[in-house]
Length: 249
Image (cartoon, rainbow, N blue to C red; front, side, top):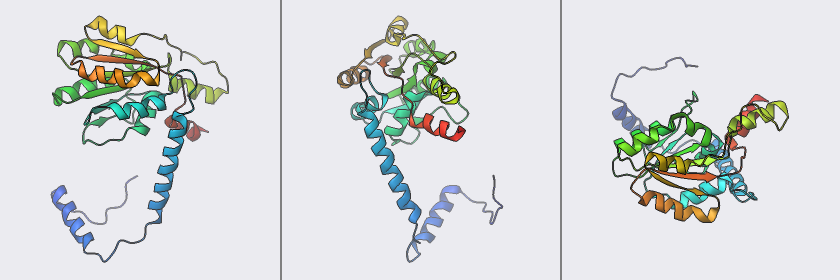
């Protein structure tokens, strides 16, 4: 995947980049880059589809609708740790990274479950700043005992769990591959993760409608203790899953 080296420079990276920027600024003008316009159109189209998805839910809460509302009420400068599942993938498409080092995801090798320990590390490294984990119910189960760690060390992380009672992403991949609605080993129980958090000594509540998001998010960040928001959502294929399925087909 590497390209042949045209010029090797042994120098401080930051100084070198600043020098290159100075050189580029001396150019009379940037060359036309029509691909930037195409990227802009694709971005606008993607945002339009996300907006349509967030308004399409009937019955149970749609993940896209939840994340659009969550974005409105997150405290400024909230540091985010993203785990696996369709629920976080919806959120990653809607909530942008605005703080350096404050928008961590599980990584390209699929280290599912790492979002919870990453959130612990984020809070330890940034005392006094708001920190949230955004995870699916399946991935949350990998290190759920670390809720005890958050309580013992007084880490007021807000754990936001999209609960569709299943391995949602795997469920969608299986259905796409087989053309069937039934799946193998993808169904979970609709566990009350907020009650699990209370059992460890923290606090929490369940969100079932869009009208409950503002109050619940506000209470969670104001509590000063580890707090689980158990968000009951409908299982819905995310843009990331659509991309994966398209690649396989």
